[in-house]
Length: 336
Ligand SMILES: Nc1ncnc2c1ncn2[C@@H]1O[C@H](COP(=O)(O)OP(=O)(O)OP(=O)(O)O)[C@@H](O)[C@H]1O
Ligand SMILES: [Mg+2]
Image (cartoon, rainbow, N blue to C red):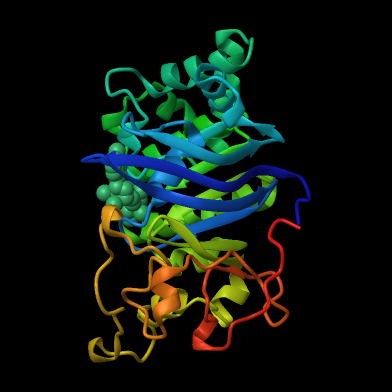
């Protein structure tokens, strides 16, 4: 679906330094997002999901010591542009939706003013035209009585309504890609479900392209066309959601799926992946999951597994020497 690639990351790596030791938090990330797709980034806390989403949108931490690889947006290699040009380019096309909508809203300015200001930063329209655009998108995202919301201040709205406003803002600026980082984690279950339905509706009806960042495999599997599973700053498996759920290749993905609560499972039945995620300064040389993997051998701790696919798993890519604990597979050249 959606043939045109909007975002292409190839071997994207972010280096940091601590006590003169260089280490990578994002390591050789390769990911393509096509127009109209809803791609999920999943993985345990601390695996680098936010770091990835933020670096795509241009919110790099100050202490980054080096960047490698490629980040193409509509074919333009953003890393070859100056930081200023890069941020200007991205700012007009990529919008972020954060876990806490207050991050994106100014508490002392009315919703209407904030929306029209943002619209006018992106389009040469009069204030009255900007208002019509704002009201149209507010109604599109399911805000009841958009005129009333337009006059309101953030504190007068519920968390779910504020999240809808933030999404309406992104849409009213014609964002090409919306990166939603745990957009429903702070909401109650009913509101969470409604926002997820909204994201789905926008993707299906308006072909909005989403990168959905979530630690909730259930949410991701419900919504996403494709999943990228992260561990220790790397994508360790990616593929169409149905395939990743049905026949996960990487032992880490298999472990994550076993952890999911399900009907008929009791607390005793719930599985947890043994061990803990190492700190980024202590990642092993080879596979970063090797310290916790039941199938590991010496090769796993010494050699970084290549990003590969095989005939048994068409469309699925993974970084594992012994997928599913089995034989080493033949390696296809990455990126065609
Ligand atoms: N500015 C920084 N400098 C160095 N390390 C950082 C910096 N910001 C985050 N980290 C580290 O990077 C790793 C990835 O963090 P990140 O916030 O991206 O994880 P996450 O997957 O979003 O987790 P969560 O599910 O809890 O939101 C963590 O080990 C974190 O401590
Ligand atoms: Mg995060």
